[in-house]
View 1 (cartoon, helix red, strand yellow):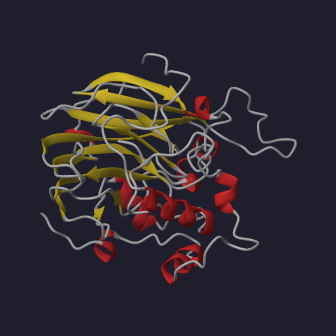
View 2 (cartoon, helix red, strand yellow):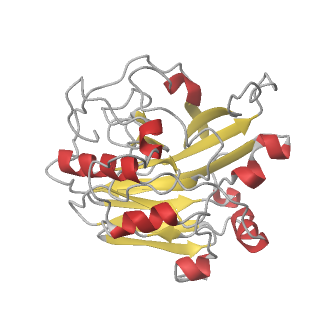
Length: 325
């Protein structure tokens, strides 16, 4: 799945540009964008307030693709998302309340439905979802209502130990795609606010791995990078991020920003199946990795396009992958 077809010289927006709201904007932000930009600290809510209770590693390649051979999102959707990111900065992190943090530690994570989703994602138990999107559904992303990672609580600079976030998705069915293309699902993480009509990894502060071609995206508005094979119906895939202290603990001195070491890992049917270092993505053609370096809240994100049936699990008790003790 490709975010949309672009000419080679048309680079994705930089993170720095997306964070600046000074000067003359490219367009007049909508009211909802202004509200999101002003929501600082982030709107941490208990899930009861946010969502109704509905239930009791091979090395990566150097280069990427300019477009996908499986499907392409519309240029209008892409431009609208770039405008959104250029005018709405990421929410700065704040310390969550004890109740909110306790909910996340208990894996009580609920789905937030984007308006673009024609279908349903339901929490069937604590940390477990069952969902479907309608045939030919356009691109959208379902995110957790609370962050899975809080820098103020989970950063290795605070904890003095590593932090791992992870979840799994089981693919139940693929049906008709958006416009004769393949349907599919992507699994990843994103910082908020994130455009709800875009899959994780296509815009600033997001990363994802896609079912239709196995490519991985990190703030990539081109065609992604080769990573794994396409997901099959019946498979369970998982994605995780491991945050750890840098080897050089003097990082952050001399006016430099403190950043964690970040490894992304991917699993298939409970077995590790590759990964990459986040900072490998920093190059001239990349949109940057800020927002993913451990300095911002990160939410679980599941991208959908076309008709898809799936189950997801955020509770370690239900994972196929078993973390090392």
